Length: 302
Image 1: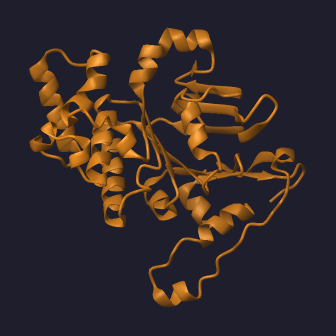
Image 2: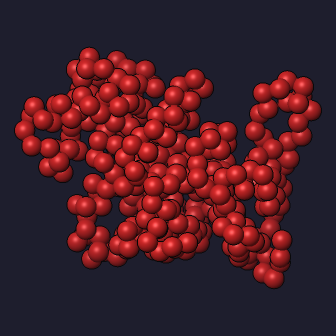
Image 3: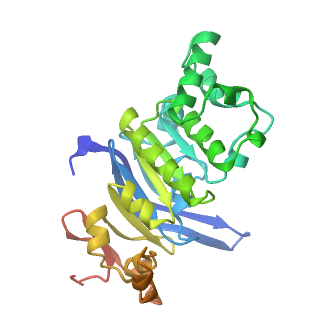
């Protein structure tokens, strides 16, 4: 992978949550991956696998226990570099959360919600220019001018998520982290939001880290996919390669759970169960074919 093509380089990232003076839980262990410029990279895995923890570490919501996170060759884990480039990083890296209700201030109007980060970062000059820009962002996500004066409580879940997307893309980010943004939405709305992500990503030429449970959506949207299991990244490959040639048992089990539209095929579908109790700490992440990485035992060849 060409170094100039890399926007984000996560190196041996680990994070643990303290439960007391001596007790702690390892949420993420030794995770490494890269996100190219202008690509959509997805992280998938069951609840508790560490996907959201990785996202929050990248946004510095959580302080990583170990490892480095390089954004455009700036080390976000270096306090001096973070302090020096803090304003630029906050502008260029945006995150969208799963729960749009708690992510949006219920007391603010939609116009103020979208314009607040723009005012803080001094992106726009003058009130009229700012308002026109906010209206433009609403139009991008399929909402009209009447939404400017509403509050989040007056909107549906899909509309609130569109507002969150408009707020994030309004900053013209180079990296957008979408942390399960469609999980709480109806299926029809999910498809609309995923299409919206795809359209805006091309429109703004940004990279997206897309975290989701729905593998069908991930297959449709992503360039490459990483699979998380018990805090480890167990497999990573270009999307087509991963879905056609899964290697790790957990990936195979995950893909076997995808519903099939044909009722006869669905009835006969065999769902695999992942019961491997192998200690993942003793395994290595190795490249088995071009850009296809799998966690396996030392000395094991696939």
